Amino acid sequence: MSGFPKDALRVLKETSRTFYIPITFLQKELKASVASAYLVFRAIDEIEDHEELGNDLKHSLLMQVGELFTQPFDNERYLGILGPVKERMPEVTLRLADWMEACPEAVRPRIADAAREMSEGMAKWAKAGWKIRTREDLDDYTYYVAGLVGVLLSDLWGHYAGEKTDRELAIGYGRGLQAVNILRNEKEDMDERGVRFVPDGWTRDDLFRYAEENLSKADQYMKALSTKSVILFCRLPLALAHKTLGALKDGREKMSRDEVVRTVEEVSVD
Image 1: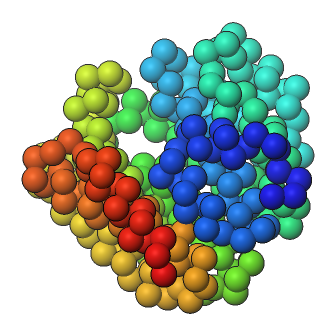
Image 2: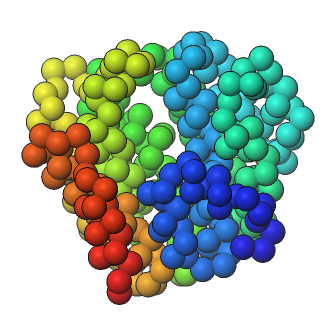
C-alpha cells in the first residue's frame, strides 16, 4: 500500500481481525482507502466507547473532533482537544492524523465528510446517554455508527470499481452488523456502561427480528455487486453476522473459533 504508514496494517489487525481479513482482499488504492477509513472510524469510536469518560465530555470531544474534518486535518489542534484524556486513549485514536494522511487524495474529502458525520452523530447520542426509546431512535443510532459506513463503502466501490448500489440497502447492511453486535454485547453494555441499545418495550426477539430484517437488506445489497474483490470483502462480515446470529439464537454467546476459521476459509475460496 504505497503511502500507507508501515505499521498501519498491524494497528488494523490489532483493532479488528473481522475487517482486517476482508480488507486484504481489496486491490491497491481501494485497499488503502478502505483501510485508512476504517482506522479513522475506529479512532472516533474509541472515544465514544471509552468506559472512563463522562457523556458530556464525550459529546464535547466528538463535536470538536467532528469540526476538524471540515478542513485539512490539524494534528496539533487534535491532540490539544484530547488534552487531559490523551494518556487514556489507544494508539489508533492518538494516530488519527496518520490515518487521514494515508487516505488517497482523490477520496480523502469523502472520508473526512463521513468521519465528521459519524463524530457529530455519536456526540448527539453521547449527550442523550444512548437512551434508545423507539425504533426510530435505534435506526438513527445504528445509522451513525454503522449505516453511514455502508454508504461510504458504496461510494468507494463506485469510485474505484464502477459499482452501482442502493443507498438504503447499504445502510441496512451496516445496521444489520450493528444489530448483531448489540445482541451479542447486550449484557456487557449494561454491566460495564449502564447502556441498553434497545427500544422501550422491545424483547430480545424483537431485536432478533430487527437484525434479520436488516441482514436481509444486506443479502439484497450483495446481489448488485459484480467486482470479485468487493464481493469477497462484503461477503465475510455478512457471513460472520449471519452465523453469529444463529449462535445467539442457539443460546451461545458467540461463534466458536473453529466456526470463524471455517467461515473465513469458505468465503475466501472463490
